[in-house]
Image (cartoon, rainbow, N blue to C red; front, side, top):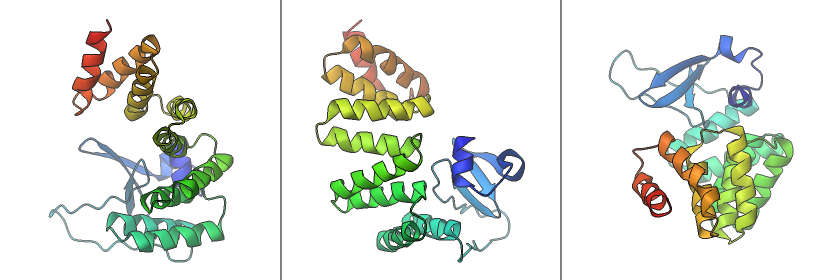
Length: 211
């Protein structure tokens, strides 16, 4: 529900107004002829069944800018996406999702300091933003700030207890810090959530080694 309210800030009754479907292993939201996944990524169905449709995005609203930016990302037009996110946060400095996505692009452009600033701005607006917490944790881990990274991984996990990658990264960091007993439940939970992952065997080896 928190995710739905972030994605549809102007929808009063998300469960009544937003159509939710399953596509393979993905959860897809549909509203006003637009479809996207739980992380806000635009979902395009290229299936040949049924008549083709042209996706029309609103042009004069903040949501319209956001979806245009998402679509540009999906199509690999990162400069266009960057410009749209920049424009959006200028129009609405409190648009947390746009701040996070802009932070991701800044990181790709080799600007970790600016990315961290944007993630933290997003968290000032929405302290429970899962992606902002997780992405900031990844950035801090890359910088060797492991205790800070653990804090933000845990915050992401607090909001989304089934976030497999957060369990994995917490377990790996705790293992690196020599805190094996703390790592074990996260290894186990990761394997429950994503047993077929390419990293699952690695997690199993750690558990076997220390049990």
